[in-house]
Image (tube, rainbow, N blue to C red; front, top):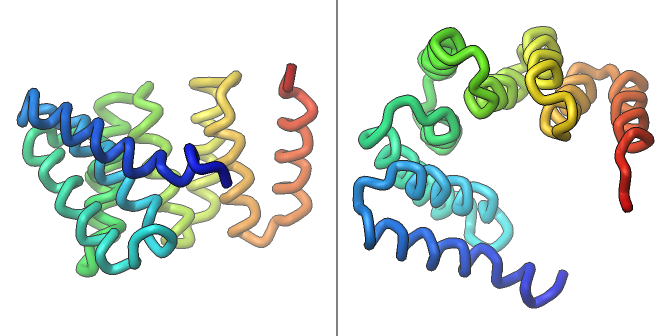
Length: 169
């Protein structure tokens, strides 16, 4: 890992803090802060602290804009009293209201994988691929869901097929 890569989370936090200082109502900045904290959990920040920070940032984002799918997902997964049913219902409602909202569908898919709803997660990943066939996200979620469901060969096939399609030049 390069020094630049190690410094990236701190740099991201500083930039997001600057954005919030300029506009305290900038909900997406809080949503991104939640993501930065969440992805540092257990590596750069101890897990309980990172999850508490992610939860605080995500709930602030939702206070400002309740339609932010990423914030909804982070607020749920970082909450020690997470109510899976409420989380799914809220994300399903976002997907119903905004059927092309890739972020909402991805958040729902990720949460379904965590909760063990693998068939539904695989179906949602297929929908992600339909919405953005050139993006990697749907293929990654499909691979994650297949592995989690114990379908290792299908997961490997998805990953290998996508790797073969990708132009690395």
